[in-house]
Length: 388
Ligand code: HEM
Image 1: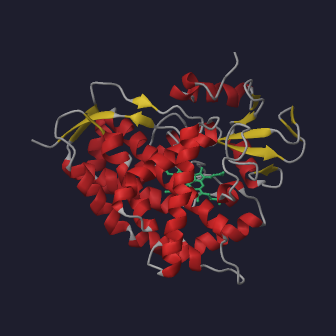
Image 2 (image 1 turned 45 degrees about the horizontal axis):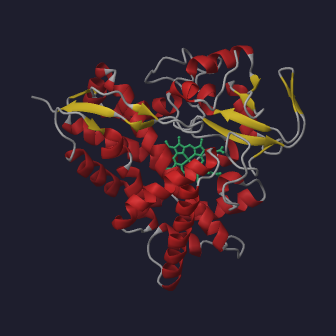
């Protein structure tokens, strides 16, 4: 039976299909676009480390769509351009800068958690998973709180452009985003602040600074990377805990388990499931010929459940060795936002655990996002209760 990784049915629960593909068709030619899907851990890992054979320059989408707006997005460049850009960004987006955000992240998470009703259904996506990352990335970039709703709309539109034929509203939103960013850039050029945009504008390697196009591209990467992925890590984590009350109580008792649980969620229910590469030459793998120029899908979600790499991979288990998980990517494009993502997820969970003794799913079912790239929820009704 053909498996359509772009279909809503697959996206609801892709794991049985991943298992079949890993076992029977590790290089799967999917029927809709003719892309080659890699699902075994070893193959995904090797492809991510071999940028000469599997290039990112044709865009990160898992389907063969043209790059969304022709900007040099870090995630869609190859060496040597990628090395240079990444070096510049690394100078500005340092662990210290992220750590300095920790108190602000914790207090924002607490504020949002305080507003959650006790013992009544509410949508956690709207109440916490979306607003926390949006407000933090807006802070990092020095963007005023009033623009945060626009921020979310722009970010959603841009992600839409990665997966669907462009709709006029998406193009409009992306152009609004760039106009806004150009105003901000002008302002910061005149009076630099202590924000990431000012730091990026000042960063230099070998006397070179980011061009205006490169700045635009990085701004978009932060917006999308900072919003869409962490949001779904928080939702996936809470969905899982709502169905495992014992685990909720165990983490509540012993907060040293917090980061372990979050990392296991990145492996087990990876917020970024699939991305794309382009084969630069003919490749023969497991008896399948991948012609030069083909789109190749690297399935992080499938690789993270490979039994050849992880014991009982479908088991969500604290304390396991998961050093090889690919939930944040691998190789040159390894995620730049891991520290921030982990911090935000930990702060939200910690604030919830402080206030609530119990968690369960709400009466109405959650609605899954339908995306080939992102796994998460559009809505997720939960019910949390304080100790009595
Ligand atoms: C749970 C949250 C996150 C997940 C699961 C995640 C996942 C990933 C993955 C899989 C890649 C590799 C892309 C590739 O190989 O083509 C990546 C790259 C990247 N991520 Fe994240 N990410 C997360 C959060 C963030 C955050 C919070 C930021 C920034 C604020 C961020 C910024 C980036 C950037 C800039 C890249 C591109 C790096 C490059 O191309 O060199 N990510 N991320």
